[in-house]
Image (cartoon, rainbow, N blue to C red):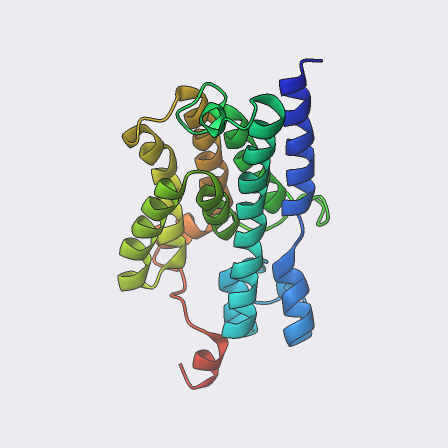
Length: 223
């Protein structure tokens, strides 16, 4: 097999299993002694952990999920460059002919988190891990995603709205920055998967039934 595809296949497999680790579930169990899948929205991501357990647990979940995405693209892009291209990062950068390799690792990180092999192929919705993966590979796009999220989520307090719009903007940012087509195609697939993962939230938003974000202690305070 071509060494490029062999190394990429290895990277995809490792990334999938690493990013499939359900940190939200583990942290909620340790910090709040609850199965976060059985409370709130039932999701293992930052928002539900923060609502159900508290700010500390939510923050830890956000950090761990973002970090596993960041390390995946950051480390593997450098391994690709070192092993295959004599350390030339431009070859595997978003403008390079082999930029698709790190972009596919990005996709594997999202798939691992959303379709966790440890939770019968169920998982989170891919926002924190996606931001981390973007930061490790295409940091300008990561900043663009954060901008879209903040503009949409902060004034409305609908995390799902900000998350969905940020996901939709992912390949658009790639086009705006002029990335190679091979880099952008996996970004399109990522956007589709993340929007699909938010399909329930989108339905609730349309019908005015989506919950605005608040920490669990706020809700106990009489809200």
